[in-house]
Image 1: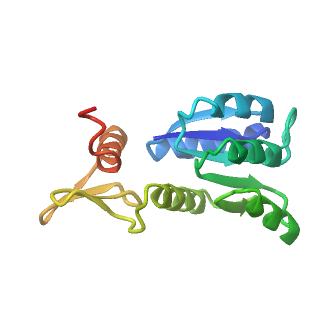
Image 2 (image 1 turned 90 degrees about the vertical axis):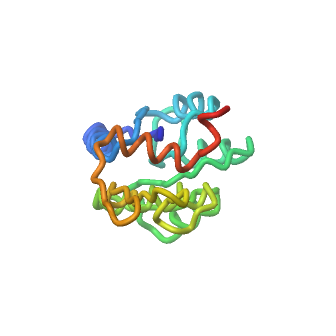
Length: 170
């Protein structure tokens, strides 16, 4: 699963990128709004973590353009702007969630899993195909009464297969 981080603060960008990679996500990271808009035209990402105060193009403008193009990609705004008006504006522009910095990485990961689940039409946190179930929060797979703790690569593969069961045949 590929996530785009749009964050101009290098310390935050590196920390979030590392946390996502540790959680078995593929990560792309850009530091300005123009680059983000250009990359998002390719529709290769499953979610976006978007800062608001960006060089070259404001994050809200990136979001507005994305939604005008009809994109339904989940977007979580990650910003230091904590005013109620800022949060309302971000959500009204089409963000799926809004997280104020500083934030706990585990909360960010949980919110990311939630918006991706909702986008896929899945409300339950555990993915299943009837034979195998996968809990993204713990990275455990279960078949019958047996639990398996998966490596990052095993988790990413099983997660992709459960989210898109017909994709391998296409």
